[in-house]
Image (cartoon, rainbow, N blue to C red; front, side):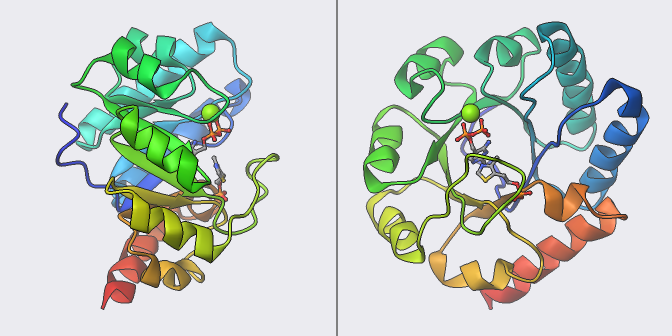
Length: 213
Ligand SMILES: Cc1ncc(COP(=O)(O)OP(=O)(O)O)c(N)n1
Ligand SMILES: Cc1ncsc1CCOP(=O)(O)O
Ligand SMILES: [Mg+2]
């Protein structure tokens, strides 16, 4: 998959997978895809490699059904094993230039950046997009720190790559990002903690479009 025409507008990052809630997990992801999610990331911090592989294969199939790219967080091995469309890595993961070598140029490489230096390096190392945040406080990632809007803007000015905002984004505060010239938002709880994930996704897309005008 070429990274050129990726639609970053609404990037869904998965919540923790629990085998005893398997049906519910996939039902919510599919509901969100129906609501218009444009990119799907499998983020799983605790599961065994076997579970990672099995869940990733099933998520990839779902993403394919809805024609959205499928990205694996952290685990390049799992991404390659299931032939995902890309990998997302952070500052504590394998180095981005090395990951680019491992996955080649046909796959999407996303890199987290919270400073200008990290963002500039990500671009140099071959990232296709950067994930920048946390833009708001979040309880979905225990070690996330909130960056200032000045930092966000400074990164935007220095890097030409598509930029996705992440962390604590909701349909209420998404309008506060409208001056930042972002390419999209990445969310977990704003979709997956809602009763109706399809409706939550649809609403986030709508609010984003409205706040562009
Ligand atoms: C789109 C996007 N942006 C940032 C992150 C955070 O990645 P990282 O800093 O490696 O933290 P973990 O998600 O691995 O805990 C992301 N996953 N996606
Ligand atoms: C993975 C990640 N990286 C920075 S904040 C965050 C969590 C995003 O989750 P939520 O959308 O629920 O705040
Ligand atoms: Mg990571």
